[in-house]
Length: 529
Image (cartoon, rainbow, N blue to C red; front, side, top):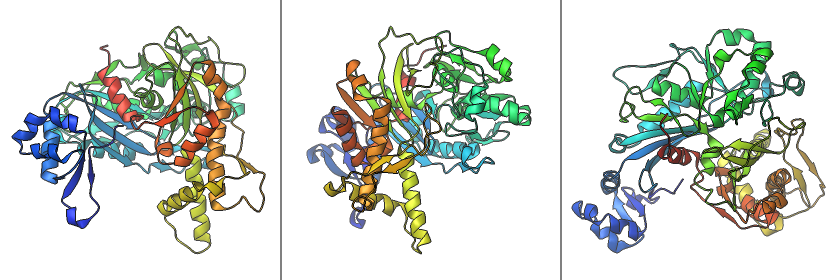
């Protein structure tokens, strides 16, 4: 997502002011508006100027008054984000983000991964409510994306309620959201399922696999509900008041047992395995409208088109794939490296006999991405930080995670942090190798300092990605540079350096690699049903 135009000043002297960050050329184009509001003197101040909070609001109003905009939403694993994007300039007008803290303890312990749906959607609605109303009134489309593969269940007619005098939806009869990190489906269970009629294999955490697990192990769970989808499919269904959820090809492929060429579910195979077709969402092309906003929502007019929810990977990649010679890496909770296949690429009809590290995910306009999707990214570093914090507590000290992050990244960036320590960081396994565990080797007395362990961990994350999609594969497909994004990568210069060393290709960071922003761009390009 493009950086914000405004930031608060830290000193008390300027506590009522903000710093304007905008090129003079863009201010010049808005000179008549600025003059009408007495703000034309900002031009003389150049790129960075001080403006008061009221002036900020006036300038934002001036920016919003000239064009329609779209709303982009991303429901991630740890946070929710939304942004308003100008239809003509593709600039972000306003954005909001909130951590959800929505994890729910699973009865399966560490094998399960589920989240509280009302808590997540409450956080999202709080974000949308904080967007400026003068802009939301001009929203012409809504784009939605979110964490792929996961699923939730709900009961039609009893899942939500929006009171007449309120914008807010209250969530009622729904299950938890079972995420892509859920490991309830063992290899033995997955082997008992039929082979999909699709080029994509099935794995634990995939929607169809989770639903089939419930049908065999907890059938009462399925009898309580009559609809299923991803949490972002549920959001679209709720906003539009749909009778049945509508899912994009991108999300359907992420569930498994879906043929991306015929764009149909493997209904016979699923019924044979114990899952009725009643729970399968209707599938439409990625970028197609799912419905229209049933009622006004935080200033957004009723009847505003809403596109079928998309995959967060595809949306984070959309703003960055500028050409066929570009690969995009996103490291947030997990990590993905991908590039676009040629337009004439057609995937095979059956999955490979054994899981492979590179898969082909549907993108837009019937094209595909070659993707190395690792389950180990920023979540590995987060687990390390939690471990250090726990050790500190056991020693009698309380250290906030923010301080630990700051210190380990500083130590790991020092030149002397390079060492012979070898870290295989696959603590969460990999879909092509689910039984794989993490490992540390080549330990000696000189390489176990905090800085060297941090550096080894960061190098291990990149080495793992490189083992899944090596440099040779990128070169064979004409890739000459890599664009990086994702919170874990953009905040961690060690990962950036290790990425350049591993691939020996130019690596640039681009803040536009944001799924909420990408979903807004997809909405701008959306197709009528």
